Image (tube, rainbow, N blue to C red; front, side, top):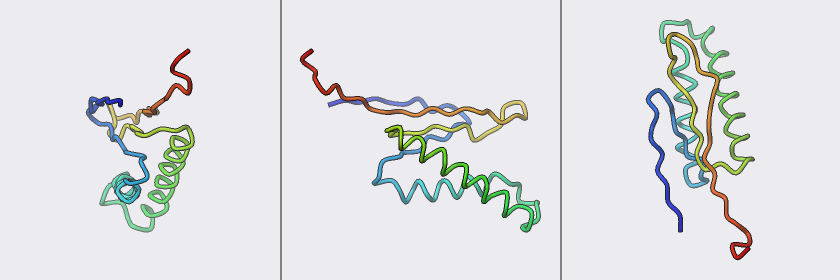
Length: 100
């Protein structure tokens, strides 16, 4: 048995990559992509940008899942007007031979 807790960093989004949370993950990625463009931007300009943001979020999620991550954390708020180019993931490692 193992347990851990993650301290939520202000301005960061923590996403569960567990298969049971797939629906919630998809909804949240759509919300994040939609929120990446201010409401006053015209729809014909905003839609292609939102699609690109959603595509990039999906790519980051796929990479984290391929690496065995269970959680992925991404910055979703700007700091001093700048986007933070960072992320981290949480994975569980099990020793295949704990007796050595």
